[in-house]
Image 1 (cartoon, rainbow, N blue to C red):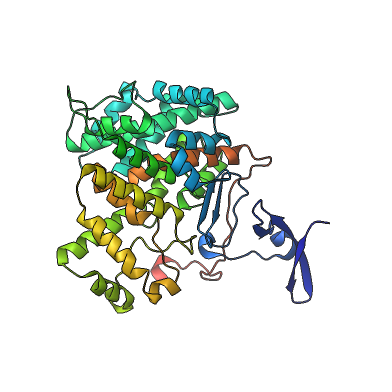
Image 2: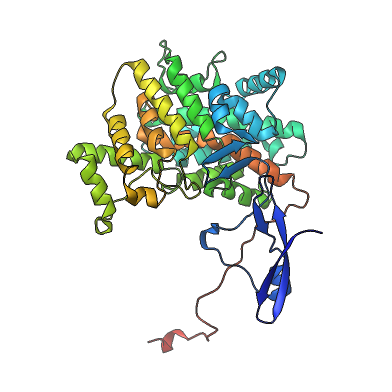
Length: 429
């Protein structure tokens, strides 16, 4: 007999089905609660609300566990790459060599932008926020690919997914170069995904940029680690927009807008800004930590703590090692990395942070590694969006294929004025 939980409200009892996930996660199915009782649940910020059942990503925040389709992130970071991980997320299994080659060929085939889209960049003023440009141009792609406004079969989905993954880095590189007044660099047909992005970012006419393989590997790893992260703000946005029947291009463009927010995608920028301020003011790390602990100062320790993780974010340790490897290969020291390492060491020995389970998250070191590669602050969140694209695509498609897809429509508890009468203008005080 299926397990249930009983909710007692006065003299009335309601039995709620218990839903058990693969990893023994347990949820109360309240989908009929309002119909049975007239009550809804209130969960501001959805911190304890499961909006869907998903087979894509598993997180155990208490244990510091992250898995893509069941595979630990540590194994993927060591043995895989961004494109293979993207395939895994979107289609559910690691690809065969032939499947991986075919997917890579599709990405190469679709990486260039239509000339008319390229002219869109001239319409944006200089210093336009790169995330605004990225969202607008991604949305515009649907105008050039009207055949994908409705996706009813696997082949159409694969083509649309490949176009988005291929073109998002081209759009990002073009927006960067347009903002700098540099000439456009076309994607190279013989370069791999991540190296090609750096080529489009930093090459000059008749002088191709040849990044160090360690830098390419580090950036590819950063994209892989950001590829999906369960039902976060931007992913939930993609699924909600998609639930209306909106096409894939519009849905991921909405995801970009959600990611643009500083509380979501801009956290690594805030970490770098914090480290630069510590360095500029010549504040010691111990003094800064004391300032953070005094709430009257209103100073936050950026890059520590996470809405889900109550342990180490497993991605932070991986990125830290990659950052150290890049700087060692470049044979240079980064004062901000040294500051970050000192800050981590001091904070992790302080009971104030340990008791509150505030550990370094993925943003604490990602900004440092992007700086080492030469990516400017303004592009940090764009890099996040490029990495998150396969997760958005996978989540959109999973929701679209659900047996009974529903339009997402949260309820609310109204706390405004009770019913009152309209007052004519001449009688208002």
